[in-house]
Image 1 (cartoon, rainbow, N blue to C red):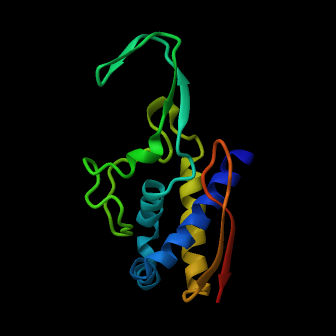
Image 2: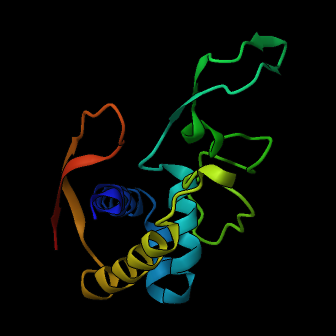
Length: 160
């Protein structure tokens, strides 16, 4: 129950924040609510609530000239992968129409988030419904959350 609760609320709060920062993208979602599913993927790429995962290697790994022995603990900074210019054109620009083949916002392979489908559904519905009710909101306050495992906002004050 708790697994998707915090991350989905953080995803939505940062989405509302970034839509205020990119008003053209917010207007695109208001004009075309059908873009919401792709917009959720873009928010997961642009500013995901889960920025890293820790793993223990089950075998020796050589990566980019670095040798890591079996049993080594490594941190995978998947949040940075969404801003990789080798993968995404203009990675620092929010684009709700961006076509995304793969991002690591929900992990990958055997380490993919089991609740990814539910999180996508909840986020899409919340995004569409919020913008239908409050299309012209303004952000009047932002408080960044301090956590070791989730990135997001602990407070987002909006005025309509």
